[in-house]
Length: 169
Image (cartoon, rainbow, N blue to C red; front, side):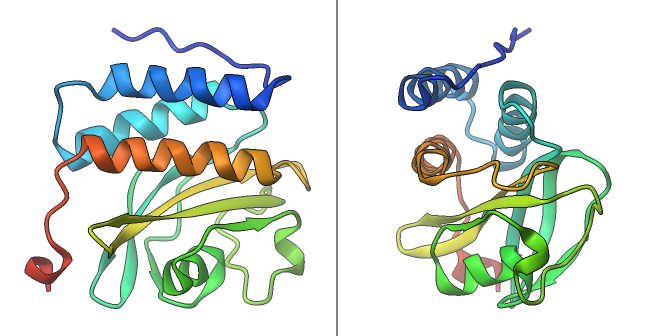
């Protein structure tokens, strides 16, 4: 059993480093993509304050399909280029959205969500999917959060066996 620490994030850089070390210990010795995604989502949901959804969408063809997550039921499929997740995946860049209602084409899976942070997952220059965090508080995420979550996403990808996107097509 893994006891999850709740972080205050008063010193975001230090807390994200500690959370990355905790994630590394949690994933150590396990390579299964789904098992690691499930534990990563659970850890982030419990450790990060003011988060109402934490999880993964994995690329399948030209759409993202929901993977392991914590929070309310989610949209199952998202087209590349659609919504925050689809746009982050299509552009292969982290998207930090302080107010999701101001984002053109936002997909409202949970009406309580107000802010979103989406980090593309890449392995050997291939898009694997995205790590998605939602918050009920507008402006919840900032540039420090983006850097910290990018590091967590990299740790997840490096710990997991990622089947080649070409093999999945």
